[in-house]
Amino acid sequence: EEYVYSTYEKIEKIEELNAFTYVEKADVVLKEVKARLAEGRGRLTGLLIAIKDNISVRGMPNTCGSRMLSNYISPYDATVIRKLREEGAVVVGKTNMDEFAMGSTTETSYFGPVRNPLDPERIAGGSSGGSAVAVAADVVKLALGSDTGGSIRAPASFTGIYGLKPSYGTVSRYGLVAYANSLEQIGPFAQNPEDLELLYDVIRGPDPKDSTTISDQPESPAQVDMKGLRVGLLVDVTGASEPPVRSVTETVANKLSDEGASVKEVTLGLTDYLVPAYYIIAMSEASSNLARYDGVRYGYSTGTDGTWKEVYGKTRGEGFGTEVKRRILLGSFILSAGYYEQYYLKALKVRTLVIKQLTSLLKEVNVLLSPTMPILPPKLGEVISDPIRMYMMDVNTVVANLTGAPSLSLPAGKVGKLSVGVQLTGPHLSDFYLIQIARSLR
Ligand code: GLN
Image (tube, helix red, strand yellow):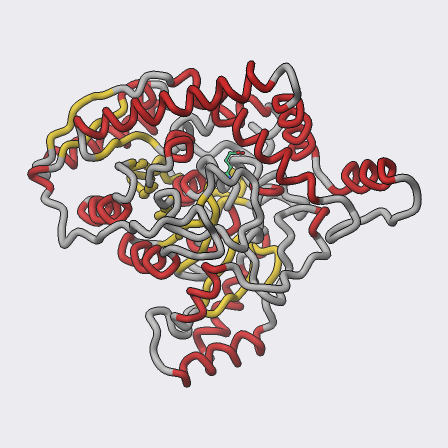
C-alpha cells in the first residue's frame, strides 16, 4: 500500500511535467498489485510500470498523443504487456508522447508538451518523453517506449537515464501502433543497466503475432573483457556536436581506454545521407500506416454525413496535428508515381549502403561510441518551429534504426544541471553485450 500510494503522490508532484496522458485509478492498481503478490513471484511481481501511449494495454486509452485517438480504448494487450503481466508487473498509466511518435521533443502531443525534470524550461526529448520523465523523476523504476529513429534514446539522454533500442526483430511489435514498421522496436527505460537488462529480457522473444520477430535471440555474456574490447569513437559526429557534448563523449572514450579497451577513431561516412534517407523511409511508411484513420472504423470522427471524400478529409483535417499532416503529405508525395524511384528507392539504396558500411566497421571494432544527441536539451519551443532543425537532431540515432542494430543510451556526464548521454551501438543481437559495457562504465 505504501509503495502504491507513494507512487501516486509522486505522479501528483510532477504534474507540471505533463508526463502522463492517463493514470489508472489507485484502488484498481492496488487491488491488482495485491492479486499479483498473492499469486507468487515473477521477476517483476507487484512492480508498477509506465507505458508509452502507443502500446495497447487492455481497457486503457491508447491515444498516441493524438486527437484522432483521444477517445480510443484498447480492446487487447500488446504482446509486451502480456509478457509483463506474466512476470507480475502492473501498469500504472500511459505516458505522453509526440503525436504518433513523430518528433524528437515530445512537443507535438495533442495533450501538450512534456517538460524535463532536470530543467522544466527545457524539453525532455522525444518521442517517448513521458516514459523517460516517469523514470527520471523516480515515479516508476521501469517504463516502455518505442524507438523508430531515436525516440527511446533521445529522451533517455536528455533526462539522464538508460534506454535501449533493441535489435530489430527481438521484441514483438504486436499491439504497438505502427509509425514506420521497418524501423521501430519497443524498448526499455531504466535508472540503471541491471534494470534495463531485466526489462529487456522480459519483453523480448519471438512472437507468432509479429512475423518480423526472429527466433535467434541475443545471448547474455557472463562478462565483457574490457581488455579485449575494441571501441570505435565516431569522430565525425562527435566533432560535429556541441562542445560540452563532445567533451563528455571524449571523457567516456578515455574511461574505456583506462579500463583497458582499445579506442580508435572511426567514421561511418554517409553522414549527410542518414537523416534524409531515414525521413524518406519513415514518412513513406507513415503515410501508408495512417491511411486507416478514416473516421469510420475507430477514433475521432466528424460524423458520416457527406461523401466519403468529405468525411475522410474533415475527420483527418481536424484529427491530425501539423507535424503528422506534414509527414502524410510528404510520404504520399514520395510514394507517388514518378517520384517513387527518385526518392523512395534511392533512400532504400542508401539504407543498404549504411548496412554494408556499419557491418564492415563492426568487423574492425566491437562497439561504436558517439553522443546520443548532438546538442543539449533545447528550451521548449526552440526547435519545434523549425522542422529541419528538429530532424537533424536525429543524425546519430537513426543509424541503428536503418540497420536494425541495437543501440543503448547511457547517462555519461553533467553540464550544469543538465545530463549528457552517450550511445553504444553494436552488431545485431549484441544487446546484452552493450548492457554489460554500460555496466562497467558506471
Ligand atoms: N525523431 C524521429 C522522428 O520523428 C524519431 C521518432 C521515433 O523514434 N519515434 O521520426
